Image (cartoon, helix red, strand yellow):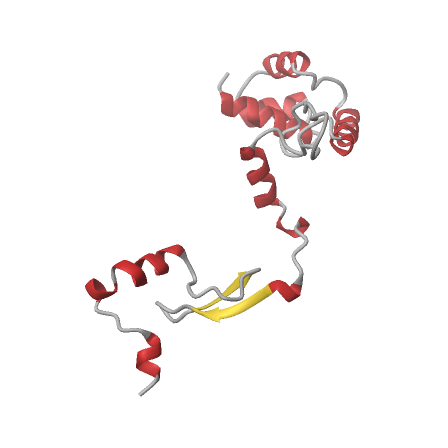
Length: 154
């Protein structure tokens, strides 16, 4: 069994899928999936397992992304994810969960390409991307592009 298949089993099991559904999705036999789930604490009825997993995530005992057990530090901030990869994946899938205020979103026009862009939390941003910054800073003479400010003002 590959690491990818293990990840698939965990993810599908977290969503409440049964052993047969997981087996058909991963291409493994039902017995292999069942044995993996039993050895990693994912056994039981799918509906009961998802309810138990939601409780564990809410209590901070399991990773919010993959469901792996978490060990909370004695002091400091409580952990929500088991790794940076899980954190990045979860926030990529759940962008609506972020608490961005509308007042901290700023609009601007890129100093290099002239395209409009949005910036969160930085009203002095000049470029739409890192690529435009690098091109403006180091490759402008090679590209033959003149500054937009110079073109606009006589």
